[in-house]
Length: 131
Image (cartoon, rainbow, N blue to C red):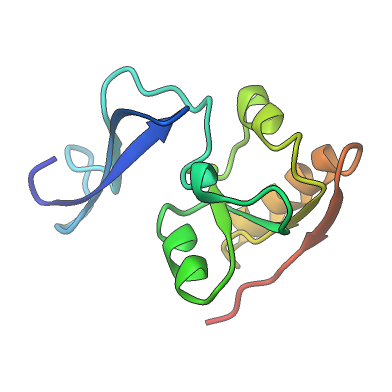
């Protein structure tokens, strides 16, 4: 994880590994994000700090839960723009979810698909992030 901003990853209260965002130029040998070996996306980054009684913001970036927390809101990250079935099950207890993905073509498309998946069990809204 040298040359990266490192995020500790917790699942069920236990540290399971790290994710790192490069501070150097992105290349084939230096990907933007690097996850520790064996990390499976069966959890959401930051969800362990969220209150079931409050609306949840679902995002794709590991930076976003930190930003939302700083602004008095709660968020959890999928750690990408895809949602696994295990991650979807983690959201079951949250009745109100706002999907807030990046405002690029991929983010807009994926947010729509994920919102559609969540509508059966949750009250879902989509946010457009500006700036």
